[in-house]
Image (cartoon, rainbow, N blue to C red):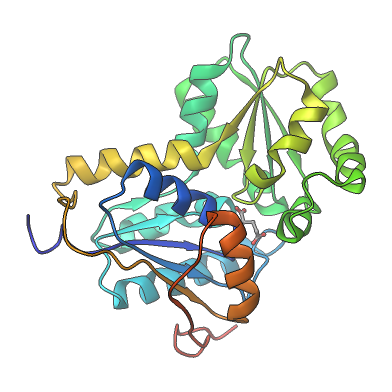
Length: 275
Ligand code: DGL
């Protein structure tokens, strides 16, 4: 195994949402070590401009590079939507985003070519999914809907609350009535609300969780670059946040279903943040 292959995979998100991707990477690639950065001081990214989110994404990537990662996974739909091309051309290591894997899964799952995409305001305004889906299937019809209130509801863990269902109906009924047969959960927080979203759409609509597909793409890219880590040795996943580690720890343990041994705060100054 090369020295590079033994290095960790870097994963970043604006906060805890990217842990849905981490959980899948750990499940599919149990020999890989993770360094995670959650930019909790600057969350949410969803309502911010593409320029600001791109700058944050560059700083998040630089932080992960300073921790010696071999690959960067942008486990945030908003950052993937606006910054993936910049990151891929700026850095000499594989960069995996969440949009392409989700788009691929949607196109291969739809039977009648009507695909719903839900995400933050930034993701929906960028039309990143629409573009990616069009590359794969020019005839697919894509209906997009931003659901800004879903992020705080997911952070609270309010999947089975009545209020969440009411809000979900408000956002999603137009998509349901338009007859989509597949819906991309285009925000890393949304898999937490899968139960509620599923209640609005009913069993005939398939929900795409881009975490699963992204972990699959991570595995493929590691293999094609000769970067897969061999089994053996001890693994120590490390989690860094830019603010309030105890809140992150509590939420993260709920997301990952287990204790987090290592959570540390890095200041925004340390990751180069001017904003
Ligand atoms: N992680 C973001 C995403 O997937 C959602 C949270 C935020 O707005 O920062 O788009």
